[in-house]
Amino acid sequence: MTTNTANAMTAGEVTRAIIESKPLFILDVRNESDYGDWKIDGGVLESINVPYFDLIDGVEEVLPQLPKDRDILVVCAKEGSSIFVAEQLTEAGVVGVSYLQGGMKAWSEYLEPVKVGDLKDGGELYQFVRMGKGCLSYMVLSEGEAAVVDTLRMTDVFEDFAKSKCAVIKHTLDTHLHADHISGGRKLAEQNGGTYWLPPKDADEVVFDYRPLDEQSKITVGNTVLVIRPVYSPGHTIGSTSIVVDDQYLLSGDILFVESIGRPDLAGNAGAWANDLRNTLYSTYKELSDDLLVLPAHFGKTSELGEGGQVSARLGELYSSNPGLNIASEDEFRKTVTENLPAQPNAYQEIRQTNMGRIAPNEDEQRDMEIGPNRCAVHDK
Image (cartoon, rainbow, N blue to C red):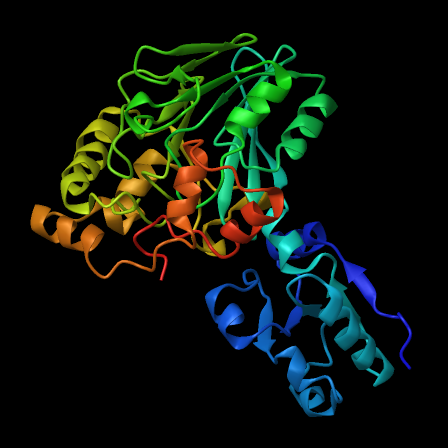
């Protein structure tokens, strides 16, 4: 009979290990197909996959595959199987074994707040890094007020963070109608008496009230005005709208990432939207300051994380380094963004319907719909 001697490691601790490049070895005991679709990686992590059912009768066969010079984290879907395997390894004499508390479910939902910088007239901008899914949200704070951009469905995280900053959430904004994760923007606004903003060209099928986010919008947050000047930026969706904050930061949604560009096919209009995407990236964004710090709504690889876990880059630097911004031929660009794309996000049609308000899955159903990586960029293979 085993005893519960293995330690628990939280999703937050794993996130910090990746950000700080701490050595960690992962034994993932989920099914091979689940591991192949989506796993924990990044930093200096290493991992192997040995399904739980291969370890029920003993862990002896896996012992030679485990390193002796680094901590070992056992991972499963919800925690139970990893506890069992971690206990078996500990009893077999393996040192430094932990299990992922809450399993991949917890990994998918954890958000790490990272300070991006200060605002000119006071206030701060924070990025929320969802390491397990590559999603990025933002909070602008100024004089006791807050606005949240591209809110994720874990709204309590944003509420708690705003409270810790003594701020009231006045606005929530989505840069576009998301297809890879369920937006928490409308819910967060309703819970806090705030206003929810959505680009009107993405809202043809929504069944709820919203404020149109367009080129005329000016949203005051304390001393700060979120300026949405002519940065209507279609291509990922027809309504995609970028947001310039404090003339310093460009919240680019899913149009431009640090190492790639957005895909135009998630609403079935890849051919029509490819031209929009190129025009946004090669003309509209070219008119903006090279000094703007680009802050996307997603990242595809942990190599995109910079100091402290922040995902960002100067616009001018991206015009030099990002392959998607350096395709001279229009035909080659169209081919790049419409052919040989990665698989579409899991349950993306149902997620879009949820974000339109047309279906209302419960919390467990929403969690299952989101399981897996984001696939919003053309390079996410």
